Length: 194
Image (cartoon, rainbow, N blue to C red; front, side, top):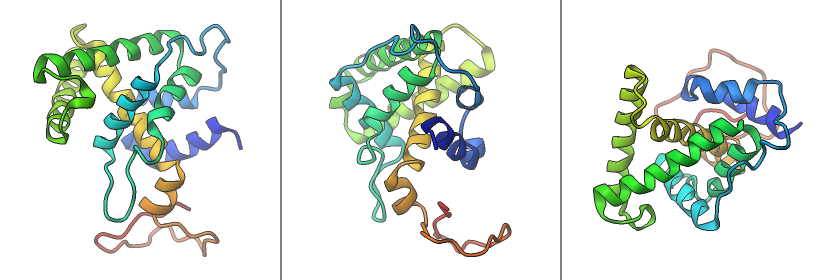
């Protein structure tokens, strides 16, 4: 199975948790032209920021490691460079820069130097900005809102298609039993990965 096909399957399982634009990119049956792949480059320091950003969305719990441990710092920019058209890559990169600028403006520190509480506050602000931008269709914060929604989507997609996400965060059965589409889950029970 190819990477894109596997990610389509995970995206389908996540359903409403993934935005329409991300679903569109993953379900498009096109291959990016070579001149659009790797249109924007990210450094190792950028990958550290992606890992910390993703770890706020899917933190480590008692039962499973978080997004950083699942390798989302490398996954997010790889998906952006390999699967998204150049215009989307540019908007994402501009939003990534806006995230760092907002961190400096609001907290006086780069994103990686923020405390977990500050990162959560910034995440809540980004969510509010994304909702407002979607409602108003304003050009203000357009790239920042796009970055937030896409990075969130890729975090969920990457985490729940990773080994940690499939075997630790969700219940994994190597050889599943019969299919039961109407099974009940007990409070706190993990959803099934197979």
